[in-house]
Length: 102
Image 1: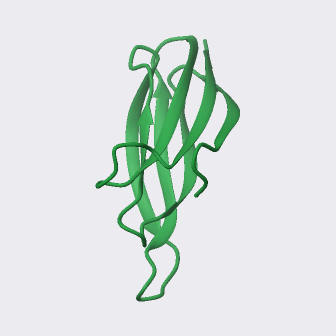
Image 2: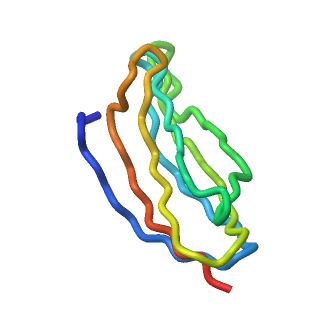
């Protein structure tokens, strides 16, 4: 992970229809986890799942899937921060601009 790196992606979805965001997560070095921040007036989190994809005893890495649904039309941002439990600051940020339509 690169400190201070930010990526921005656009998503358009219909209100009431779920959409997924999948992010690579490497928990090997101290339990890094992606944590989302978003406007709950526009979006609701339906699910947060982790699937380990590397089958090696010393590695814990895989794909993290977040499933959201737009509850009201509008525009918002989902910001994911890669966080370690023992650190106060995030290692990496991913930013998604989300437009929810009728």
